[in-house]
Amino acid sequence: LTEEDFQQIKSKGFNSVRIPFGYWIVTGPSNGDVYVGPALEFLDRALGFCKTLGLQVLLDLHGAPGGESGETPCGREMKDWRWEQWRLDESLEALKVIATRYKGHPSVSGIAVCNEPSEKVPADVLCQFYDQAIQAIRSCGMGPEEV
Image (cartoon, rainbow, N blue to C red; front, top):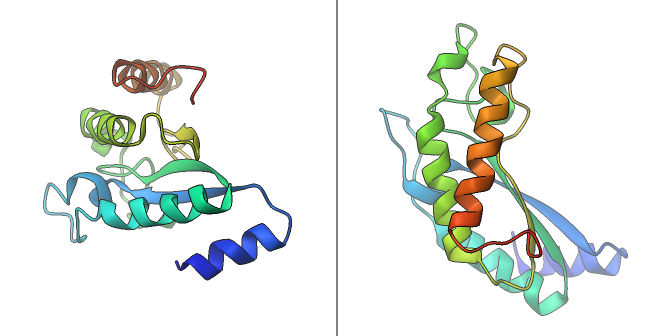
């Protein structure tokens, strides 16, 4: 993405963007995943453009460690994916890094803690993950008035 991309978004009258990112951008790949990272400088650059242009940002953990599903949107397609492969603790660690790095950033107005989790994930497990994700983000200094 370039500054011109964000300028075009702004010129169309939009005031916010959603920026999806995979965990590997935050922590680097793990468990033999074939991604490249870490590469937080790309998020830093995009957020800098958004700050300059007055755009708000929803940061979206779009590819969790192990996958939040076996579908392509989470960064891999695995027909035999099981919900137990989602490495929830690693997801929480990635979210802590994001929260610590971007707390107080004037353009960050939200963090999506996972993208389209599979319906195979038991509801109690997913709800517990959401609770833990909120606690992790809050523990890093991002209060409810911020995200």
